[in-house]
Length: 118
Image (cartoon, rainbow, N blue to C red; front, side, top):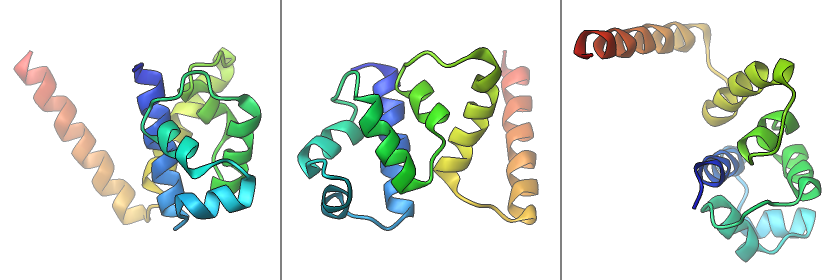
């Protein structure tokens, strides 16, 4: 199983749960079987259809570029950084200014520990 598919699956599962949708609800809404969606979320589907990914992006309010990059499809260089930022935002949802400050502080702490431990 590739890292791309695991990352894509995690991203899609997180987004679905954040929207409070069940696998069955997604099946009913966009016509994808819940078994296939489960396999997709568990990283067991290689090369999912861009059309299907687009439908999921619309339903989950995700960036299509982010999802395509996570699926391993080529994405223009000028879109990659934005897609990486959007991928993070898609996983954690909206954050308050206070939460953002705390996340930045924690990330800086983690990075300083890595530098010290090298």
